[in-house]
Image (cartoon, rainbow, N blue to C red; front, top):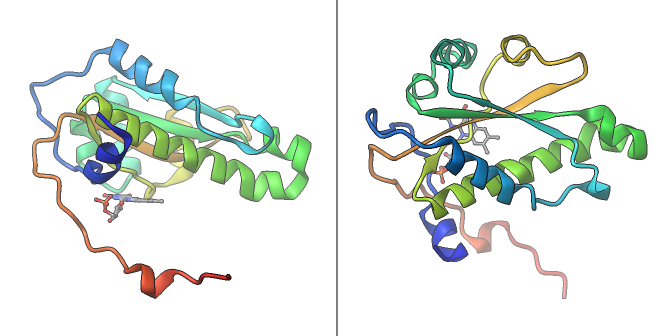
Amino acid sequence: MELLDAIRTRRSVRKYEAGKDVSKETIQKILELALNAPSAGNRQPWRLHVVKNQLTKKALCEAAFGQKFLEEAPWVICVVAVPEESAARYGDRGRNLYCIQDTAALVTYIMLIAREFNLDTCWVGAFDENRANEILDLPAGQRCVAMIPIGYAAEPRKDRPRRSLGEIVVFHE
Ligand SMILES: Cc1cc2nc3c(=O)[nH]c(=O)nc-3n(C[C@H](O)[C@H](O)[C@H](O)COP(=O)(O)O)c2cc1C
């Protein structure tokens, strides 16, 4: 799939085919490619926890205030930031900004690359972070910043409205 098609067809999908699994090899390929994402100073201040275990997915669903599709997706990829790896070079700007931007770029790469494999995703950011960190057994200082359920869509991809360029762009020429 061309990049532009991936961009045009990526939509938040919140219902996944129950009987259609995704192989671990496919997930590994997606993640391998996603590691091409940029990061400030190439610090790559991230970890990935890839969850298939049903009990763990159920716990993540509860931490995310009952967003059921987390439990129903074949896999949930949890993106974890390591702020101190950015802070070591960039101080507060690394700790508070770069590591969040870096992990956001990684999330976006994962979601777009997933389309190449005809898979769908949804960026989930609404969850109790402390609870998620506990469930994933993260060492102190690591933060789960996003969850990405991934699977085959069992609902149509809906186009959602976007602001127009005129509303948001300022050209300085
Ligand atoms: C930082 C962030 C957090 C989000 N958190 C959630 C979430 O917790 N649950 C959810 O269903 N969608 C969540 N979304 C998905 C947005 O609702 C969605 O991207 C937006 O409505 C645009 O729709 P589209 O992705 O289909 O283009 C989140 C998106 C972002 C970028």
